[in-house]
Amino acid sequence: MKTTSNWTPTLAWLGAAGVALALAFAAPDEVNVMGRLPTISAKRLDQQPFILPFQLPAERSLALVAYTKHQREEVQSWVHGMKLEADSAIFWFRLSVLNDPGSDVARSEAEKRLLARYPQASERARLVPVFTNREAFARAAGVSGTEHAAVLVVDRNGRVLARAEGAYDEAKAQALRETLLARSD
Image (cartoon, rainbow, N blue to C red; front, side, top):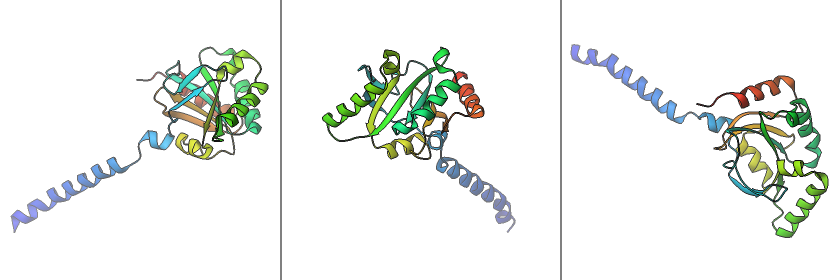
């Protein structure tokens, strides 16, 4: 009988360790929680081919994501609030996520509308129109939906490292800036 009672704590410990190990594998990892920028082959508005996220020129970049033309003001509030046009330490770009109309003609018409809104070459070089399902893109990126613009810190693997939604907010901007400028290991 003593032999059985000596094994009880050992078996209990092994059972607890097994449960902990199973939970560690079953728990969502950081990528699943924060989101991931889908891999997309696109063209910037200046017609340069661009494969997201692999062709991002910086290890960490700021993506300003708009789902509708009405969100341009929210995106612009981040450009002005973070003084992005004057800050060369941060690589940033705009993503205009459009529901795919299903034809090249309709995509071309959408691009023409964007070209009319963004006449400067510097603006066109920073704007990447993406034709996909808006809701699916938002889910993959880990944002709550398409009702507001999203601001994402992404790495070259597409992992979302930080995010904010809506109009510019100083506290959120500071957290995004810290993530952008942090060294990756």
